[in-house]
Image 1 (tube, protein in one colour):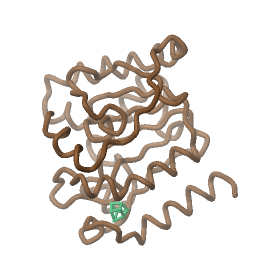
Image 2 (tube, protein in one colour; image 1 turned 180 degrees about the vertical axis):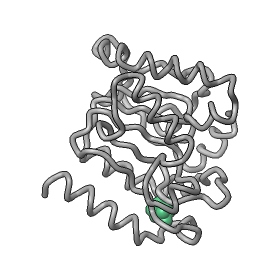
Image 3 (cartoon, protein in one colour; image 1 turned 30 degrees about the vertical axis):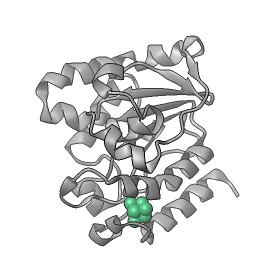
Length: 209
Ligand code: SF4
């Protein structure tokens, strides 16, 4: 089966998924979008109000800022794959619960397997925690690591800069550094394995931020 069809099949499963409680508050599942051969994948946290209504990732104010940040490094949103760690909107934009993160994780695993990107950019602490479960985003943002042949780069979520204007320049600087980080990927230190954190550890880990 070709990769585009596999991504369509994953999206169809998400649209009718009822594996966790988030399906109760879902208008539309938000599987993510972008080319199946994208070299870069951006992973956010979960759909917000506008994403839930439209079924598309990053279409609200944070999405506008993400497009601006991509434009600053010569990328269009159509060039990259954009998705989230949970595919349905947590009610009231609350944080996704550890059980919801764990239950939804296979969809992202399958997307990563199909797309096989060279670079994974995590946006915010929940997607960061998939690869760096014991880290604080304030300490590791903008510092890439090679994980299983992919460059994983943790960034703040663009929405964080909208809520905390003091973070805006930090987010802009991190994004501006991305082309150079990719260029120097082969010099980046590698880790053996960074599997998603176990459910029982995740709540404690996420309370660190
Ligand atoms: S968040 Fe993920 S696991 Fe939960 S209902 Fe939506 S698609 Fe299914």
